[in-house]
Image 1 (cartoon, rainbow, N blue to C red):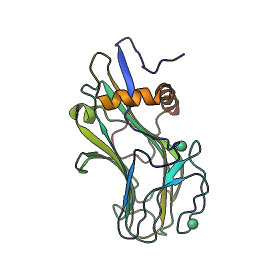
Image 2 (spheres, rainbow, N blue to C red):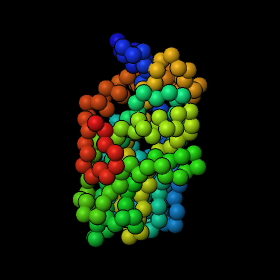
Image 3 (spheres, helix red, strand yellow):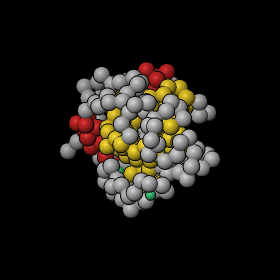
Image 4 (cartoon, helix red, strand yellow):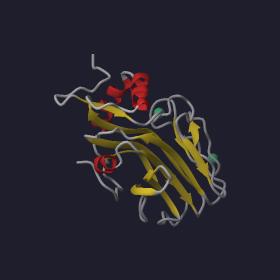
Length: 232
Ligand SMILES: [Ca+2]
Ligand SMILES: [Ca+2]
């Protein structure tokens, strides 16, 4: 049986720094959602969630739950989670799967009608915009797994608090993005003490850490619509 500690010849461990990245708790545990103007918070979706506007019920991307934003008009919805970076980082891979539908007839606009993913600092300032939709992108995009090598960013932020933020800006009304299978897989030397929060996550996640890593690796790298750093 595979150990929770992803052991390699280098005596390293790999841990997912994101809590409840698959939303299978059935709620937004670990996440914070905000909204402005007529946007609404991201909502948990069990397949029966019918968001305001023309989008109807959509099956979760994987498992029994994902999340989806909704709105009654213009505004910005955000979904954010902060995490503590280990004291040493060998590598860091950020993975998520999204699907979306944009009902605005003129398509996407940068930045007024856009879905974005950013790495932020502990004050919420954007360190790097990892992904964003671009004018001309397809209005309907099925489940798309993406993977990014964030090693340099996490190495620059060892021991600090960083965050991942998803946001949907809808200046021209209805657009719904779904998210699932969000993971920040960080490889760190086994001999280096990890922050207590990381060990707690290791203990709590158990075998899932190893299984999650395997699943993400098999998904491969889909670089469609990327305008940020891409994993090798
Ligand atoms: Ca899920
Ligand atoms: Ca609806």
